[in-house]
Image 1 (cartoon, helix red, strand yellow):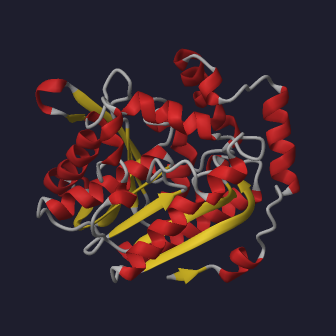
Image 2 (image 1 turned 120 degrees about the vertical axis):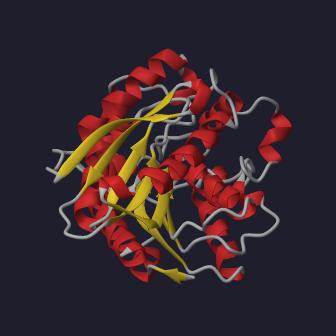
Amino acid sequence: MNKNTAAADGLTGLLHPAAEDLLGKIRASGFPGWSAMSLDDARRLILQIKVFAGEPEAVARVEHLRIPRGESGEIQAGLYVPRSTVPTPVLVYMQGGGWSMGCYTGVDAIARALANRSGCAILSINYRLAPENKYPSALEDVCGAIRWVRANGRERGLNVERIGIGGDSSGANLAAAASLLCRDNGEPQLSFQLLVYPALDHNYETESYRNFRDGSSSALSREDVIWFHQHYVNRPEELDLPYVSPLRAASLAGMPPTYLVLAELDPLRDDGVAYASRLQDAGVATEVTIYPGMFHGFWRMGGVLAQAQEAIHDAALRIRRALT
């Protein structure tokens, strides 16, 4: 496992001053933590986070799509295509939000930046949200979007032989689970996965959970994760399924090359580190960067955190390297 040693050497257990200032402002605005809110209020709040993302970049082509879901409606999505003279590889992206909040427009600035800097198209999708649509509805939508790209991407100038997948938080969970499903179902292997502080298990007693469980150093607490898990699954025992908790898969052999972006002060950090180690043990090309002094959610705040811009830029370079 290649580790960003500069990032790892800089771990201090303390919030970066810019991150501490931002979290202080968020708390001062009245944010009580996700699990202390009604779901309706949480859904309204997460849409406001995009103000921290910065000014969206211009992209050569943006299409707002409705992907057929069969008899159960459509998947709304945004396709961001950079300027290119050849068919463009594509990364299917899922936003975070505890499987129960958010939409693709909330990560519009990130999708644009990734497309421009990677030279690859980004298909950012709206999967069905829990608790109205519990597991496996969201995962089915992700797999449906991958199949749609394979079947329809050529007519939109996409290279359907080079498809990656990615997401942040619960969206990264769906990315990892979809990679497992593609492998297990004998479907064409994905070429890459980008996992930004992924939710990969329900072991709430890791060191990072113990250190950051109250949410005072992050935008996520142990109780928040439990609350989101309760929304997502039909029964508690489903949390043991590898397609819900990919860290519990019996084997990670055959997974696509992976890049993980982790935040130092994040309850989910140790799950990401453990997943990276298991991928490496299974022979999967794996790289992980831990961003010192950053909290869960920093990826979406490139307009106010230089580390978020750095993370997006570095992730785009990995996408370019893997898919082009």
